[in-house]
Length: 129
Image: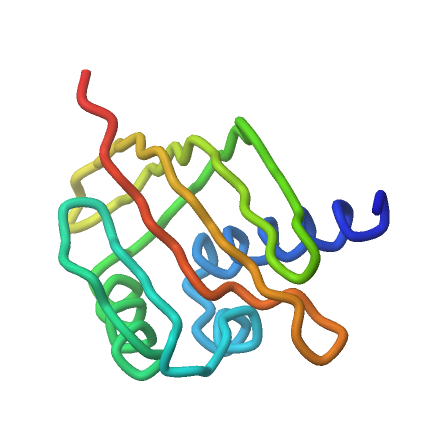
């Protein structure tokens, strides 16, 4: 079980490093390519399937000059081949010379398929101050 926790946390960390580096190819290897994958960016509607999810990340990456992300894990659970991580995302973006800081609470759900944990659901909600 400890091995699974380590693998899920590594997959979660890989997602945020790909996000931070704006690396769509690495992100493609982290996300499930299935039509059942879901992504909800803060304040946005539900995206279904890897094609639409990938397109959303490409737009975010294209419109962001620089990004730093810190995460603080609140909870993590595994039940057979499904795992979830609940965390706080602290995102610093630089767009057009403006520094934008945002905090979100996020849920990432991973599914174990073919000897690997894949992200199947990401939901970020803004934290209002």
